[in-house]
Length: 81
Image 1 (cartoon, rainbow, N blue to C red):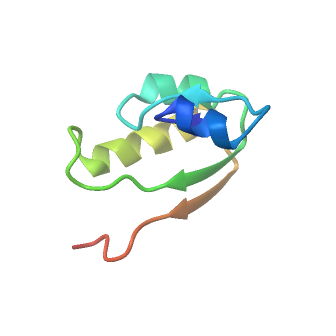
Image 2: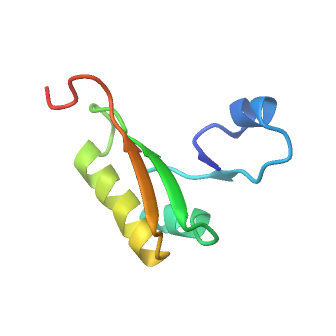
């Protein structure tokens, strides 16, 4: 599981491998995905330090670097506004 906040996840999910990574850093994402071929990609929200489009490109690049074969993507209501 790739997360931004390890402490929150460790309280909810026991005995699961957790990687701390951010959509801002393609290298950390690539490392975090190295043993995975499936991904639930949850959209980032606008207004971050790095533009949402660049963050999403980083995720896609990390998936391509690791030959991820299945992606489920979620967004948020009215994401195009």
